[in-house]
Image 1 (cartoon, helix red, strand yellow):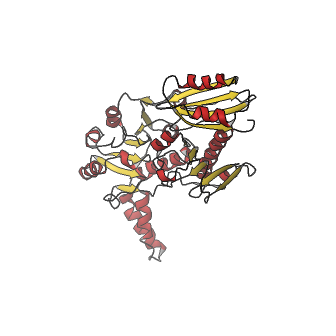
Image 2 (cartoon, helix red, strand yellow):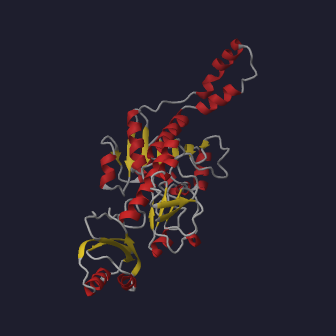
Image 3 (spheres, helix red, strand yellow):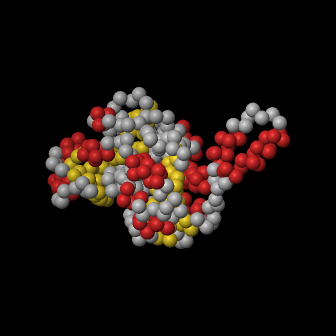
Length: 393
């Protein structure tokens, strides 16, 4: 029986994935084997002795102490792409709101609520509608920084709207590249993209390399009067530098999903309260994906979409399986196999893979591992933890 602790309101579609005969799931579990959360800020002191995995129902994991988890051999999962369509649609909304003063027009019409005469109402509307004149997106240039799950969807939608699309992503994987429409023009660097784009939208993760990416220096490369959209993470944009660019008019408008003091009431800024993944569909998709990844890991040891462990999958055929996490030090695998050989235990199959400072092993054995074997493997200096995977896959 596995114990899974939940934080926040996890969509029922995700919770329903757990077989009640195998899992106890709830918010009150004291010492869980796994955790499933959304926005809860997880402290290091919450990482219990039995904890082996954490699944974040969302893409960002800045609310999870990933480094501490790696040191403890705790796998951290996220759900990349599960909320991509939800974010894409909000970005499209932002593009339209930044181009057409729909919000201003709605606010103006509401201010006329006291007018009872339809003729007078129509006359005022006709007289004032020029105040809300906008521009079309067709033929305009959209620069997309980050062409992953969200960026590639935004690119396709923008092309369908008749926009010219420029893309920049030096870390683009081969798999992600297949999703990027061929019509996207690949830029060699950010200044080249900024200089040509009427609109710039950010879709990169928050990392040391991306924090403050939009700063005083990079803003100088922007096309004067261009619009900046940020539906990635707030710290990617230097707020002070942005404010100065807005005041000078170098940045024409800023639309983002992250309210920050000093910009909330700016006339050329529109901020939403972190609505990127706030759709019923996105919440369900994230919950289901997170739950499935936890279940697969707990029952087979396989890892997919981890932010701190390598991707590992080993087909289960027969025998008994153990999962071993160790510091990524040369010779450690040999020490493990020596322990097995000393006990005359045959290895049926084995998969070993490392990522940064962590290595992970799935080992299928012919004989059932006893506590003595597990203790002997744990006694190897580089080994962090050992887990027996019970049952057949």
